[in-house]
Image 1 (tube, helix red, strand yellow):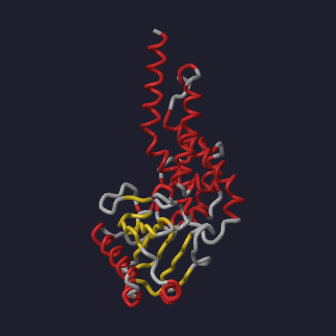
Image 2 (spheres, one colour):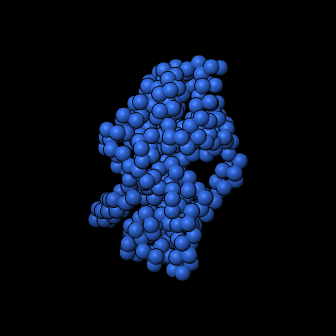
Image 3 (tube, one colour):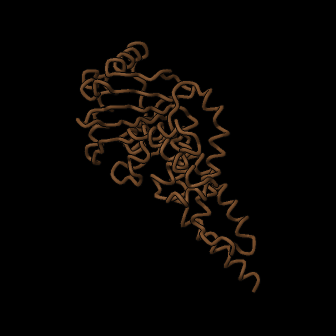
Length: 299
């Protein structure tokens, strides 16, 4: 009988956690900007959950969903604080670990995982980030957020107000359907692979930006390129000095909600997220070359 009771508790505990896992992963990725770190944080939450529910079968946990959100949020805050020094000494521009989804059937809402949005979250303190995400993205009321963070409701409201000032204009304003996204990514890939700089110029908005994150581990631009001419000068210079790098395989995908490319090169994969503007031109190119952020792609 005791063995049956223990098995029943284990099955219930696992089912309660698995029901919340997708939500916890979505929260942790937005908090940390890394799929890998998000998985680690959620795994740590699972370990805490098993320890907590082993006490009297977990009968003292009246709201499993709230408990798990609270545990995951606090684990992410701890990770952000520990990573502060590492981020300050990062070599070159920093971008989040790419979130790769199929072009035709993305799961995530583009405005909640866009690179620009995640970069805006980077400007927030860990507490501001947690408050903003829990309240404005995950629809928790202020009272629940206050309990999660062990802060007063007044303090939470103030943190939310400050956070909104930083992220107000960061979400992408222009969404594109799957067909448009595929056409944009295909045209960019074709122009890049053939060194068609006139074609690239036609695809780029005049004020386009290009950000490349290699973490100092692969060749990359060490500054943000601003403006169509600046981007083209770099690409033309690379072509004239080194020629076109051989592309072993090319895949179309959504990268952080934007039309994108996965390029498998001789030195490993890289991702490109292409953020469109209102005219269907490319307003931003986000390139991730840091191999530590591309292990899921074979790099």
